[in-house]
Image (cartoon, rainbow, N blue to C red; front, side, top):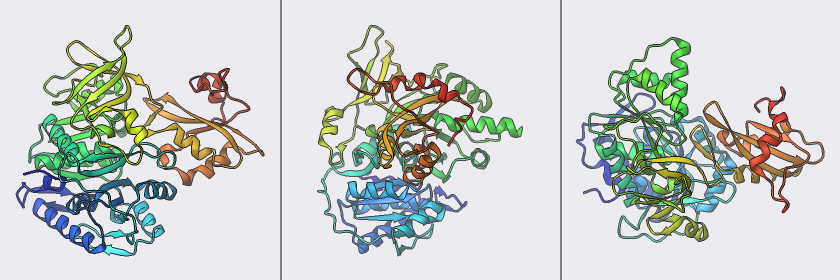
Length: 501
């Protein structure tokens, strides 16, 4: 019976394929379960206790997957972290979460290896799929451990800035198991399927809707540590059957096929879905033409585990709606305007327990337990099909990753010569750029500021352009009118020297 996250791997036969690793190594479910049990014992010997928060710093690989289930087996909180984060970002998460220790999987990731050295993780946890390294345990106290899956925290994922007002989303075992089941059902996954896991396991889309969904179905998972069009083509040719991805990945695959005059070879591929960022109608049409498959569209958030709604393969659509809600999910619009547009409210078994150590933010987000304010503007057709219209909250979605302007602004203003900063998005080439406008002193220039910022924020949060300005457009109250920045400084954006930093 599947009660806890680590139970997901229990039912498949020992010899059924579980994982195809980044280096081509294959592991059956029996071997996978054995490594999970082995690592759980090693973690217990190391001093990891139920209720401890443990960070896993890695890119997609078998040892990352083993660590996820082993921590669940121990009863600790899983904190999956992208190895692309900077040291400062990792330190911020470590401090906010009160992590007992940090684990690193260097086999598939040079950055993870660098971090392992920086954090002095000298203890090796040997596994057949690749050793993990762990720091010494701290004296942090464990959190209380509930007896039921609806109350016990399984994982905590950070959804806002790691260095400015971090928000750790607490998801229970029941939250994640519901989403695993819903995602598997949505895609009609079976043990014959091979999930192409290129979305990071540190992101809720990859963690829950790809990896955990595949385990629920007893399917296999093919791990790709870092996206490249050629890596996707190789995986298609090798037998991948399902690809959930962000729209920008499909764009790059199509571009690569065109530029290299390559014919797509995907003999078993049967399911495509996009999420994590708005889907462009033209991209959807071109993808479907090349692949000969429907590109399904979906919507979710970290706080909802993440599944909320999705188009159905059996009912393909020619628009870019986000489809009807998943089973057991109810959607409605709060205070709709004359066109029926308002904030999307979500009632779902996947709704988070709350934000860690942030009761104010939890109260603002949860109308009541299980009912969440999305912060997104939407409308719902009479037949229940939902359409996203915009965002209430301040958010930039760059290549499927969430970038929160306050975090970037907060880091910029740490520079002693930055007086004020304002960060906004600009839509370009079906993606969003991060633009930073700053007021400075002592002759600080954009290139110097960009160089200073580079080691302090992960790559996808870095502004494409930094503009030094004399003053911001402001309201009578003195509030910066961020919605006017792009038009107000249009001459700067169009200047020949406005090169990408």
